Length: 276
Ligand SMILES: Nc1ncnc2c1ncn2[C@@H]1O[C@H](COP(=O)(O)OP(=O)(O)OP(=O)(O)O)[C@@H](O)[C@H]1O
Ligand SMILES: [Mg+2]
Image (cartoon, rainbow, N blue to C red; front, side, top):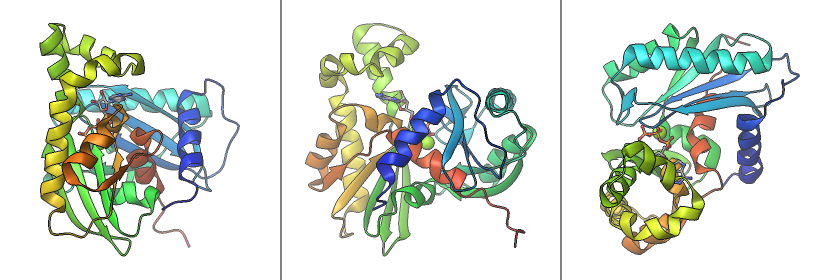
């Protein structure tokens, strides 16, 4: 486990919300996470500390695959401009992530979006490996509950030995809430991320949490997993950890700001391969 995890995630949160101009002019490491729900842009300094970042909800990716190219490029250009304005210099390179198991053509498609938005794409990394670059667990499971999918990675001796990705994520929580309360998806999405509303929404979304738990249980079956580390935006929903723990019988932990774990790991992989 990374001993600096909590501090790193708290700093990422500050980097995402800071309105002031960052006073920095050194080397950067940039991560782009094109997600089903959120597209995240995160910039680290030369010592891999979060410097600036931003994210936005958009429907340009579905279940890890880019479905709206023009929309994705426009969105990323916009996020890039926004972060550059705060930094006072241009971002020229980035790394990007992809869900495990997607065809190579899809990985290329994601990299092409990053290029078209004006970055030299220096690395493409699978999302669970990115997440574990931050969590640094030696043995256990990393479960990324995003917007569209739940990604599972089993880690043994610090290496990812098994991955899977299945539909069910935060979007399904919102769909269930919208249906039950007879409100629009956007309204449900807004309600859901409000911590004060989550107690009353819990009975509605509990079956979706159980589905996530069942998926995890099925994939870790036969592997000696002692701890499950939940990351991804949907891990923010209060109570999901207990439900996954109940369904799997395995201790389940969630870092503060689980949404930023994978983007951080992607950014860490943006390195100049030709540098000495
Ligand atoms: N505080 C919160 N409480 C509950 N859900 C949240 C909260 N914050 C974000 N989410 C949900 O997390 C999801 C987005 O998480 P994340 O950014 O990890 O997914 P993604 O990378 O866009 O999707 P995917 O990985 O499936 O392509 C959305 O469904 C969003 O509503
Ligand atoms: Mg994701």
